[in-house]
Length: 129
Image (cartoon, rainbow, N blue to C red; front, side, top):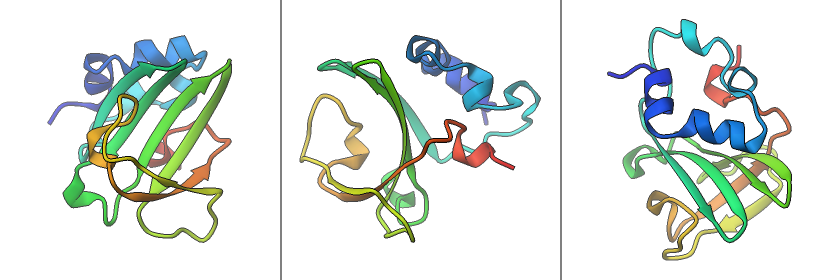
């Protein structure tokens, strides 16, 4: 299993965080000291289209019943962090019905209804203590 830092470098996530104006430590605190990969069931995908720059961490379809999709993105100079789930959380801010396909979102999300939490905390959810 690759360490999270290795995966983030390989998938251009660290480079893209800089482009978003976010520090690596701001999103992934203590990344260098991690000995495992809490995102081992997620796939990372960076997309840039239609004025959006997006980092996606999305679970494989088999894990979507209990894991969440996390995204950081910028649009018109504003950076957002979303946590999306297929199961209804206690609080959510919108419902996103993913299209059958598009050129901005990861294929694992297509044709599903996602509950969206607008998270002002930019830290990766699985690294919070």
